Each structure stands twice: as structure tokens, then as C-alpha cells.
Image 1 (cartoon, chains in turn blue, yellow):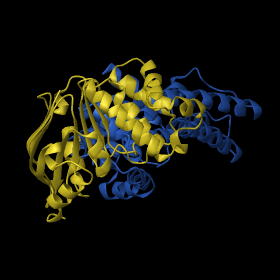
Image 2: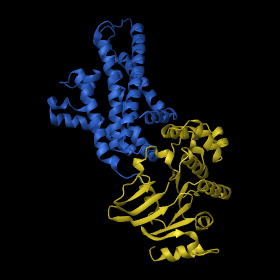
Image 3: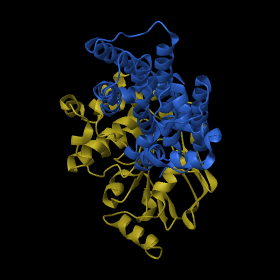
Image 4: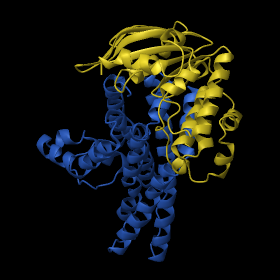
Length: 246
Length: 237
């Protein structure tokens, strides 16, 4: 497993694409927090601060895409052939990718948190407010955001392993975010809808993008996300990954 | 370390790509797999490498299926096609990824780059292999196959994209490898090249075995291999 994990790390560190992609996370946060303040956010309202920190979770869309390239990206370049020649046990390949991409996703979330803290502190002081970091609220929001970055990275790995076509996997992910989950949520009703991936992540990272009325507890949201990742990865291992590499 | 293909059959949907093919590629020899397009050469090699599951039959490497080899990269080196390279990854980094995976020291990357004549090109390269010609990609693939110092080499159309000097170099390399007691299996279209290189020949047509044996059994003299090949494969298109 050591050779497998080191070769995965080497693969990521030897190209620029993944890092350019991950750099989009902090950019989203700077732009998002700035937009929040500029659109008339009240820096003296503690809820406003949580909303600013919740951008860390929203930036998890970037780690989702990052996770998708783990397997689907290898099918696109054809390097998956070399990977399977080195490691014929395909389950272990997926397991290693879940670990490596999950950890890098979490690290990206950590960087995003620091950026969120910095940019929020800057705006708050510029507008005459003060940050409230003594209560648990701020840290639960930031910590949940980091966990969401990890969770979406592993969901992405599972999704990209299941839908091996890179464009198809990205399209499926974006369609789900933009359209499909909203429709499914309406059909399911809010009691069931809170178990859907984006609504579970909303509970985890305490964002309120979808304005769900009923959400899971924060910890449960995290577990549900990991469950989806495990489900996709398991489905990939028993279906598409058994297929011939031609 | 022999490659033994026994009663191998592979169907894709309703199409039988390979039907009941058996042959052995012995150690110390160059075995050439010949056949028209779509005759099942690549499928046979991919089954041997564990990338494609056989419908029936086996392909064993030193008696084991590929997936059961404990260190596959140290037993088998493969050149399958010139894709499989990330355009933004540099040649040396590509080889280092594979060296890590194979459990061989990173300096092997430089050794094999030198061996295939890419050391200089790899030293100049800044932005990945996207600027490599087909011939350079082919050499890089051969370098990757040599990384683990394997006992068996499997090469699918290795002369593809190589210039005349490159083809002569490849011929010498394959001879050397076989001379060291390694098993060399190549799939090829270039009969004139095979006639100069191979010890044994396996001819496939429409997924069926048409001939397996020493090259000399197909006659000697210029054009002997070509006329034998055409006779054996014509009726099968």
C-alpha cells in the first residue's frame, strides 16, 4: 500500500492541473466574503460572521471536481492502464485514491479556512466590526467546512470511478448540484430530503445555500457524505472497474 | 519466464476477438505476434497483462496469471500504445511515478531515459511530454517497460513512429534483451522488420491461430515471410 500511495502522491505533485483547480477554493472564498460584505452585510451581526465562514463549505465544489479527476482523469489520459499494470488489484487502487484525495481535499479545506479567517477579519476591521471567535460557533462552522472539503473529495473519487468518462462525471456532478437534487428534494419532502448529499453537506458545513427547513445534526451530515462516497466507490468496484481496459 | 497462452477465447458482446488460441513464448527468444488488423493480437496481449478478462482459457506468465504476480513491474514490462501519458507531466516525472509504483529506486528513471536515448530531450523539457513526437513517446514507453528490469517484455507495435535509426536501435535492443535470457513478445504489422528480428512467429487471423512455430519453418529468402503470411491470413480477411 505504501508504494501505491506514494505513486498517487507523485502523480498529483508532478502536474499543475490539480493545483490550479484547488487554488479556485480560496478565490471563491475571497470573492464570496467580499460579496457578502459589499451587498450590505452587517458586520456587527454574529450570524453574518458564520455566513462568511460557511463559504469554506461552499468551496467544497472544488474538491469534488478534484476527486473526480482521480479515476476519471486517468481514464481520459489513458494512464489508468499503467496504474492497473503496476497494481492489478483495482480495489486497492481505489482505496488509495480515496485516502490520498481525501487528505489533500481536507488540506485544501484547511487552507480555505485560514483564508476565510483572514479575509473576514480584514473586512470586519475595515467596516468597524469585531470577530467573535470565543464561542464554539465559528470553529464548528470552519471545522464543518474542512470536513465538507474532505467529504466531497472522496465523493468525487467514488463518482469518477463509477462514471469513468471525465466529461460525463463532471456533467453529472454539476447537474446534480444545479438541478437534480432540488427536484428530488421536492418530490421526497423535507423529512427525507435532508438525507440527500447536498442537504447533508449543508448540515455539515452550516451553509444555507439551499435553505432547507429541516437539516441533520452536523456530525450526521458528515457521516452521510462519507456514506455516499463509500456507496459510489463500492458500486464502482463491483461494476465499472471490473470491465476490460481496452 | 515463459508466456503461455492456452485455449484463450475472448468475446466482446457477440464479437469473438480471440478464439481458442494457444501458443508459448519461450525465454531467450523473440516471439512475434502477427496478423491483420482486428485479428486479436492486442486483445491477446491485454488478456496476458490482466487488463482484459478472458472469456475462456488462460494466459500465464511463469505459470501465474498477471494479477497473481507479487511484483508485476519487476516481472513484466509492457509497451501497449503511445497514449497513456499525461500531456503536462514531464518524461522524468512519468518514469518516477512508475518507479515508485514498481518499488525501484528513482534513479532508475534516469538510467532508462539514457538507455532509450531520451536523456537529453528529457533534460530540456519543461512543460511535459505534450511536445514529444510519436517516436519519442514510443521510446518513453519502452523506457517505462525497462524500469523494473523485467524478465518478460510485451510490446505492441513497438516500431510505430520510430525513424529508421530508431528501428535499427530497437532491433538491437530486443536482440540484447532476448540474449540475456528474457522473453520478448512483440505484436507487429511490419513483416520485413519481423523477418529480421523474430525467432518464433505466431500468426492470427480473425481471432484464430493460423501458425505458431519457428520463423524458419515459413521458408527462407526475401519475401518468404510475407508470402507465407498472406497465404495463411488471406482467406480470413
